[in-house]
Amino acid sequence: MDKVNICLVDDHRLFRKAMSRLLSTFPRVGTLTEAENGKQCLDLLSRAPDIHLLLLDIEMPVMNGIDTAELVLKKFPDVKIIILTMHDSESYMEYLLDLGVHSFLFKSADPHELENAISAIADNGFFHTAPVQAMLKKITSNRPKRETLLQQHALTEREREILMLICNDVPVKEIAERLSISEKTVHSHKSAIRTKLNLKSTIAMVRWAYQTGLVSGF
Amino acid sequence: MDGVSSTEIALMFAVGTGAILLLVTAIVLFVVFYQKKMLQEQIHRQELETAYQRKMLLATLESQENERSRISKELHDGVGVMIQSVLTNVQALGDRVEADVRHDITEAVTHTHQTLREISFDLMPASLERFGLIHALKELCTRLGKRGSVRLVYTGDDSLSDVSGEQQVLLYRIAQEAVNNAWRHSQATEITVEVSQSQGQLTLRVSDNGRGIPPEVQKQSSGLGLFNLRTRAEVLGATLEFTHLQPSGTGVHVQLATHG
Image (tube, rainbow over all chains, first blue to last red; front, side, top):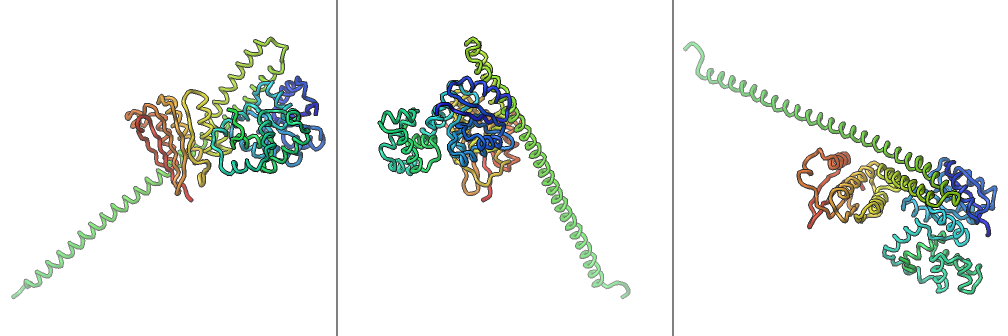
């Protein structure tokens, strides 16, 4: 996709206004819609199917971000979700990651990081944002478990190669060029990896790669 | 012979003595019985008083925790979002403002925000209510680790069983106080927090490699930090122990019976 259509879900009007102002300065951002809670967001998604990405807050009245993410992932699997939060809590992150959300950013993130993350996640489903980086670093310091090491053998060499490129923030398009295959083939490799490892999202794949020691960038 | 025979006198004497003995025994028994009853009543009254005091203390601590939680959320989610909105607006200004002015405003607002978040976390970690003691302790280690040069490590179990939410909050406060004492006063370079559970016993241990708590400080109950530790352990019905670690440092050791 060329332009990324974004729905900003946050219960604070002043913050939505400020964030919309900032988002509209990014060339990659297309239409911008706002919802003040999860319920409104779901209504919007069923009425406007061209929303590509949600910037989703956690704490909201009526329907919070966690419940919203769960429902959106089930009903609208093509929509990417970036949790945009003030909670710099690992516990929240791990929990949401297991649900299958695509990434995390702090509301205080640098505008460039926000801009890059939006493009990369819309295109590739993964990007090393600061909170994700911190979490991966922590995972790497843990020793891999035996069963995850065994799982690693389930992947073909090509699949492992692609996973390593994804972990290094290489866009799908570039992966296809580097390996002289089509983008579609890259995508089908990606979903094969996900199925084999029984993982819900690209970020979960990346986490797995760090956990098993397939990738270690620190 | 007229009068009372010696046999009769002996009999009367025996009966009289017997009666007196009986009376004395009765009195003695009564006194002993009465004293025992009094003692029992006193113990009972003391037990009631202690239970009442514990209940009152628990109620006070509970309302304190509720208030802390409310203020913490208000700061984090209410004031925090306002500050964040200011920051995002400044960022959206882009090149319309001189770069160094934008940088200075951003820095000041970011610093304010950071301070606010620390205060909010110290008051009540959001993860404690949502994810429980272990998560909150891990986060305490990570956060304090970032604030200074002391290394903080959580080791121990990853989950708990049969520990109520109230108990978890009390245990968290004990750990927090112990960690803060070590962090502020002991000149330690490393602090370890550990929670483990086995056979119905929960053990919380906070150890540091600092200079230790002087014995005179340990004895006085007026030291607020230690007083808080003791009060909370008492309310929990847990044992609290300070140990001197070799070669240096202090261990705070809490043991609580959990069911199951």
